[in-house]
Amino acid sequence: ILKLIGEESKTCAHFESVIALYFKPINEIKIFKGEVSGKIAKKMRGNHGFGFDPIFLPDTFPDKTFSEIPIEEKNKISHRSQAFNKLVDFLKQNYDSYYICTNKT
Image 1 (cartoon, one colour):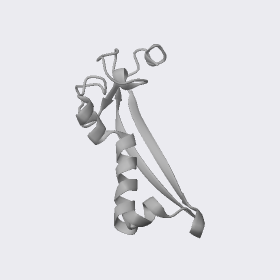
Image 2 (cartoon, one colour):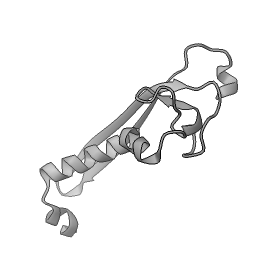
Image 3 (tube, rainbow, N blue to C red):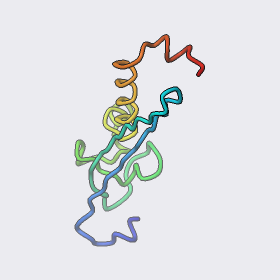
Image 4 (cartoon, rainbow, N blue to C red):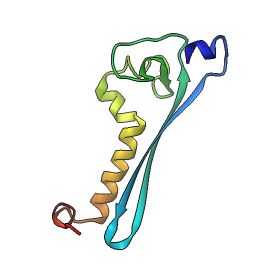
């Protein structure tokens, strides 16, 4: 990616994660989306994470790549954690935990 970008000044980037939950008894699908925007760094930095983490500068930490941010902080802002937390919140608000864990239909 860094080779493809070259000297390009517009390096905006955006990640999205989507979780789909299918409720078989009522034939319903719920979608939960997380997203994070940022930029592509000019060079790889950091030692944590995988994939694009060493070159992605999130808007919430514009001077650090995902690889340079402590994992606890990254997990608070990542697109994956946002989508997952939306799913968890939905389940907590709408379904009894007993039903979720014991209903086999």
